[in-house]
Length: 537
Image (cartoon, rainbow, N blue to C red; front, side, top):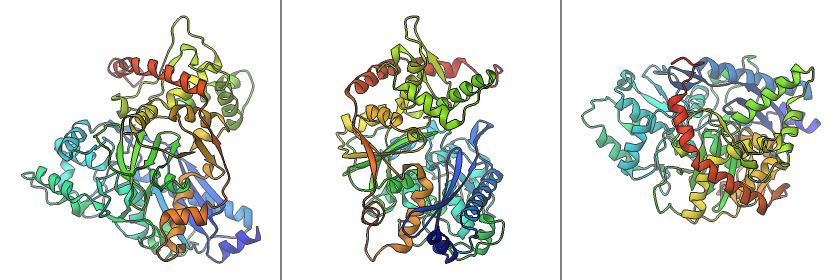
């Protein structure tokens, strides 16, 4: 207690804030990387005019409320305020599209990673570059706006991601960490820049469009982990801390996406290491030794925060449908006059899944709240399917939903390991999926077919990951690599649990996946035949 209080009073605390899909989280650490306080704010995206979005009001309200919650925690624990910080970092969901004009005004509402509206653009760019360009990438959103002849395109001065936007407004710097930048446009991992040959191809594609901008001029500048990326301005300090207590001048590390912070938080930046983040969405990151042999629409090629090549399998949907059913069960309990806190409810429901049959007793579901690009589902229609002779029990029902949450992820991972022969020595899990001990870890091991480890720090998540990157900025030794810093200064002696795949689970998961793949035409048809909006077209 006294050590943490002194750290805060002397301005040696390090702040990390990450904007997740449903929660904004802040973590304050000491110089030894241990969390000493935290804050959070719940938020949710909205589907407006055909796009999943968060408003600018949502963003700033959420940031201020999250930081205020952190200050409240610090005051309650240590009886002091936060006047100075040693360093800070800000991260957020990767990809998406935020376009600004000369005056710094947002031209169209923020289009998040969750949108599946850029199919023609992504397909055309993948063909042009001979490099997989997913729909959620910023360049896909930009080119789709060009194809749609949207009025705002001619006025673009700057495009960035959510993390890049927050960093810009807090520091005045239009920069982006290379990991987040790699979800905007392909990266030359040797030069650590946007791929110049692909920039040229895009410029030729734009010939005759008569736009007053060139692509390289509207993209944020790239920074590697450990490089300077600006400092908190007086205006930025007020945007973050409405109390006016926090002083300007705090060094801020390059803003990163949630994939990069997940790699930092799990010490997964070295070749043949990987991590899986599972929450509202899910993704597996594997650091590659070389480029893949083929283009795979299911595999994003991005980078670590220090610029190494990464194969990324990204599923838009993971736990949302599980959360929806948990909410329904909570309502049922309330109707009987019983109440269950969230932790107990999830613990019991996840625990029941372990009692289920290895193949879920013939039950099948798709937890697609939104579209899922990996399996070519354009719009989400959560669905449960069973036959008259399926074994319809709570245990099988819960196991089915957990399996289904990993279905799209499993298909992408099989491409990496079975088709591309990528070797993975270890995978670390983090995110809400692993909050209930054993269950998520065991099911993920069955899906991945490889041991899955969860460290004691896994629950800290991306906010802690960006705090580590901020610490690396100000505490690294001369010439010390990010991998070396994480292994020697952060994770040396760290404890965790490793779970090997259970043979019966793997075999059962494979049987479930056969049904999952065969049933995908049903899910695609549901998107066409079942309208949204309570039955109204």
